[in-house]
Image 1 (spheres, rainbow, N blue to C red):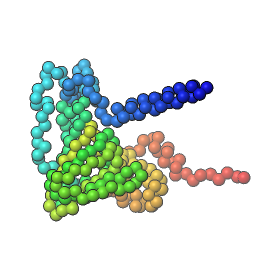
Image 2: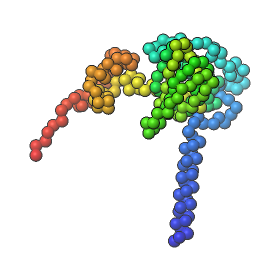
Image 3: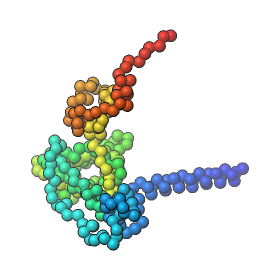
Length: 250
């Protein structure tokens, strides 16, 4: 009996280790099984890896592994005063299967790289010019923040909300490296108030404990469209939610 219990415990331990190993090894982009796979938009290619078709290796040249223009300052055309230019697999197909991406973030005076998260990658963020206030929020809502100066590097863990704010009257520049060829980005404010179609009013008014007027004001700052068509299924849902619950007789 004791031997069976021990064997059961050992089996349970190995099962947990196997699960953890599987989870760990799949926490980032899968490792390539070939030297490279330069992405192409060719449905007739024989190999499809990480969402891209592979260019025929015999047709690959050094130019497939070069990206030019990263030194160009991004045009800042938003109220936040900062612009992130991400060079990922969609812009630089040579990154396909290699598990990396890079971005430059240009800040105007007192510019903000708005609170956001990257669902598929951790990020190393290096300040090249200027002084920034930066931080991230953990899953227990603790803020880790600091002041970054030229030459400083901070790491933002995968999936956690983070931000950077230029503290100076002059422009600032930072370079970010990602552990994914396509890290993705979700802006917190846009993810709540700028969705298409809109999140139901009842959800947002209750979540933020404010009235619909406040929600409409916030939506007006982030919504991509003032008039979003509502499909029949959502119409039924809205109609159902708008009805007052019936009171049953005792």
